[in-house]
Image 1 (cartoon, rainbow, N blue to C red):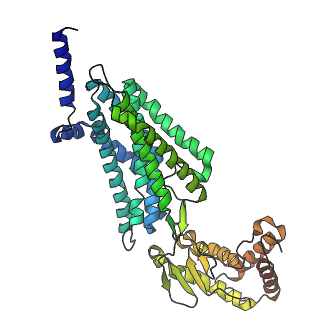
Image 2 (cartoon, rainbow, N blue to C red; image 1 turned 45 degrees about the horizontal axis):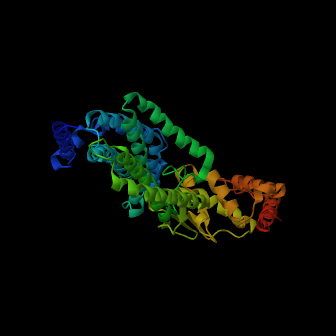
Image 3 (cartoon, rainbow, N blue to C red; image 1 turned 45 degrees about the vertical axis):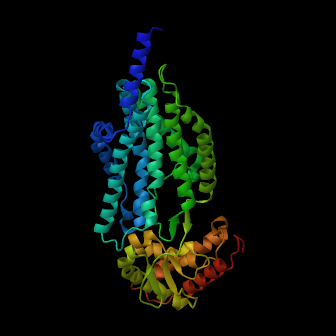
Length: 421
């Protein structure tokens, strides 16, 4: 190599290093040119369609609203991965070989816009709940639920960005998006309810429950670690003759990989227990006795529940059986509980038939698997049918034979232990 060639190569390497310096002006240009800025309306549209196309019963609970919103990641993640593939290919085509600093800046700029749109969507959902009359304000638990979904989006975007850098082809974007969606759907099929990739989605009330902080932390660290390991791998492998691969990044790759695998094991172990844990709910009660209590977002429904319960309680008193002293939302999560459980479906819909079911269930001891015993199934059905008829408004006629059958059914249910009579 001649002296002139050596100087030319050194000058080129110096220009590449200078171009990669993360100056404030360079970072502003990167953020302004990011594909995430120009595709923000598309991301917002995906979020809006997924949110509006689903049931909106969550407007009465902060946690339910936030956790149901996070289900958007199932659809949004593959879209973000596809966009990241295009952004990675754009970076690889326009940046000097070995320009490792702008690699991280390009990906971070994309995630900045994705994160802003996603957090804005959550703010809109919580604002919707507030406008619907939900009292109070979200607690830290609801706000911190952002960790796992944002980290999962980061992992999917890092995978897409790496694919774009490696291939330098935009046409791979749809394939990467489909692959991400396939992995998520496959995880639901393989793991079922104990899916470590689940970061949101609830079909029923979450009153009396909270997200497990240990699982939330483990998921966030695991997904963020996958993103970091993916980008670190790019830094290790990006180099040229004038600029060797990053030795520091290479040293970090092994411990980071071990940390990611370790946190993944923790996530799988924790999610198999449950994603939620019971907590004492904040309840508002409507008079008594018996008292009717529900979470603040449902308190306006308590008068309707009381009106539906009064004729049924009157029918129970005519039979002489013991009657419940209290009705509470989420009583099912507190064991033992002497209260009738008021479910979210009971509060959100016509309470009559559901209330009869909850009242009969109150007579069944905890741990009784009555669904496995034909005689217990018959006793449960007979008690429900009689109560639904005798407890209808306006039915006050004495029915000695029916009342006796009801008493025998209740006695059969109360004698149940572990599915045995």
